[in-house]
Image 1 (cartoon, rainbow, N blue to C red):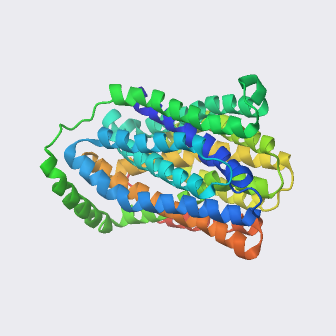
Image 2 (spheres, helix red, strand yellow; image 1 turned 90 degrees about the horizontal axis):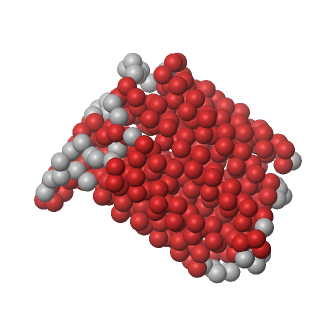
Image 3 (cartoon, helix red, strand yellow; image 1 turned 30 degrees about the vertical axis):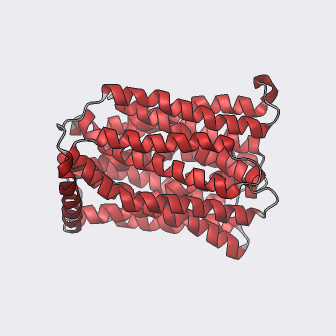
Length: 405
């Protein structure tokens, strides 16, 4: 269980350090220097959208094949290796090379998201169903804590580059990409060494059976009304969650906030996210996972609306703290609730569809914000569009008739 959860610790550094903070900063101030902020927002949105689309299309089929071969862990390691190598490659991208930076970022994001899809599916291998909520929350909680620890070192580096023998903040940020690479490698080892899958390995000729499982899983999902409703709800509300994660720093920069303010705000989110994610695991056990999701999505709706009106760093900090209270909870309860609804022996195939919808939604959200910002000339209107996704997701979730969990 701990070995599995530590993969969240390992790869959450990529989400926090690269996706949420430093890639948007370097894209705006180094790789695309001199370009209008709305163009940078559009480029970042398109990069996130393309990566998510590729993962969305491939994840269900890869998951089905992994189920039939009994090699979920092997597929996870292969995809993680892609993410790790491409993250390290960002160190070598120089001034003005925004197309190369985006290419590395897209490939790293594909490796990260693809490995996470398989990682989610392995939840059924490490704990019995009655502990899904708590173990899922433990993973997210450790992710927030681990990512925050590395991020605090990165903040020190960026605040005082000379202390580390660096000549600029840009050099410190580029070195941060290397540290994320090493962190990801080191803390992936417990999963590789300690976690054992519950299925025996099958012969490679059963790859075709994986394709058939993919088709069969699609048919089963299509005939399960409650599962379809839940996946529709998840598709919509998780879009808002992932969009805010990926676009928050870009939005803060557009408001004129300093990089130091944004870094502090993101750190607040993650430090609060650690205990809050664990609390949501308990909340899921006490009031039910769906009720816990109602709370989290409702808070997101309020946060997104309030974000349109903020003007100061202090207000940004308050919203960051509120996001920290619910971000991990929404993610962990969604994952554990879905695990209760699916057969354990085909979990990778089902979680492939689950993550496919998450990634398809992440195609829409960043692109939506980027497009609205580009045509309107206002990032505030772009961020406002996200409330539609939270509202519709909440509506669909109320229509799901869930079995007791």
